[in-house]
Structures are given as structure tokens and as C-alpha cells.
Length: 318
Image 1 (cartoon, rainbow, N blue to C red):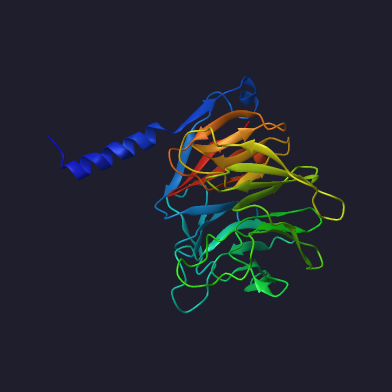
Image 2 (image 1 turned 90 degrees about the vertical axis):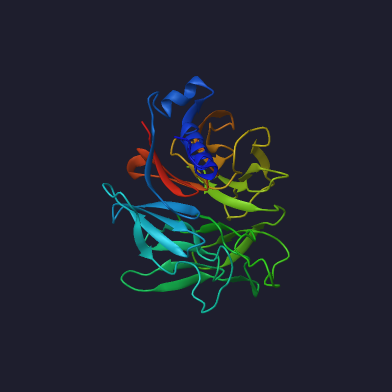
């Protein structure tokens, strides 16, 4: 039976997307990071743009944002669908704000509090135990942030975060900053601007020894991952390009980034998730078949959770 053309095209596109899910192995060293028989699991789907996953050890679940829907979802082992953990997640106003008003990057601090990058409310917040949210920071030198996007928390409690313009409404003059910055909030709450010369800073992560700050840039003219040496006072030295994705094929740009305890760098990018060694050599990719936003390690780094457009995926790690 011949299907109607729109339906047949839809099924073809879905089958192609599924066929594209694979592990691309470029170096034998990848076998120590991803088992030769590693598979990509689809855990749940149906989201507009899934982002910012984090493993919640206390709740034994993955939390992740759906930015356009202004929702944080939760998924537990055995679930076939995700359920709502928090709504609203990033915008608490009473009117329409923009297409990406919800929360984005999520992380837990040493107290077990969920720290959220909020697009619509243009702040970093933290969820108090059995209570509501409190603001960690919502401005720098009196000017409101653009739309805090992603974050990394150091062992001393310092919070590093990026502030691109993606969450700002398309219409209207909402912008107050003349740059898209990378910031640090120290344990006492003081905010410092670390980097201001990136066009679209996005994912951010710390090396295991916290001597390097990695920043992924989601910018088509310069789709790069930067590495900045960190000084003892929390400021950074001049950065260098750690990896340039411009020659890679596939949907997506550098976005979320996480560092394994052995120093392996996992970054989303063209095709899905890039896996790089400490020197910046590309060992392989997890091909997701769709633009891929962010990643998180599961308990004991035994798994990698991936938010890939409308889905939450998982790949087992050795």
C-alpha cells in the first residue's frame, strides 16, 4: 500500500534518524571509555527542547529542563515516560515572555540544593530544602543578565556560569549587557566577570583538578571549545582553543560539556556527543541523529545521560 506523501516522508525521516544513532569510533582509546558493544538507549521522549540534565543522587532520578515548556522533568529507572518535577522552572511572570523562558542548566551544590539557570527570570536560583527558590544572583554591577544558560560548581562552592542571549525575547529591547559573559560567583556571593569576548558562551565545566575552565561556544562562525587556566583567586588566564568543531558533519553546535574524573571531555556538538582526551584529540562520537544539547554522568560515572532535542538518551560507561 502506498502511503500518502507527507506520512511516507515522515516515516522515512524517522527511520533515518533512528539509523543515525550509533557510536563512531575514531581511535582505539575509545574502547576504554565506551565498551565496544555500547548501545544508545532512548529512555523517554516527547519534549520540545530537552536540556541541562543532572543526576539527583538523593531522589535516584535524572532531572532535566524542557526550556520552551518552562518545566523541569524527572525520570527514574523503570519509567517509560518522564513526569513533571517543577513548573514553572525558569519564568514566573504573568505574561508571555519568549520562546525559551524556562530553566536550562541544572546542578546540585554541596548542600544538595538544586541550582538552576533561569532564562525568563534571568537569574541563578537555588531550591531550598522542602521550600521555595531563592536567588543566587540576578545582576552584575546593577545590570540584569541576558539569560543564564549553564553552570559548573567548584569544590569550594564557587559557581561558574555562562550568559548568552538565547533566552531573551525576539521582540523588544530587553538586553542590558553589552557582552555575553562567563561569570564566577564566589562562596560569599560576590560576582566576577571572567570572560567577555565570546559571542555565544554556552556549556561550562571544570577539569578534575579545577585548574582549567572549559567553555563551549554555540556560534556557527566559531563553533569551538575553549580552555582557560584558572588562577588560585578564581580568575582566568588567557584561553586557548581546546577543540574546533568546524570540520565535523552533523546537526548541532558545541553546547553542554562535562568532564569525567579521568579527564576525558564529553561535549555535545555536531552529530551528537564528542569524546575527547585531555589533549583535545577526538576519540569518537555518540551519533544521536538530532541536535544534542547537554549531558550528565549517572551514579559513579557508570552511565552518560544525554538530552537530544525531544529525547532523553543513555549510554553505559565502563
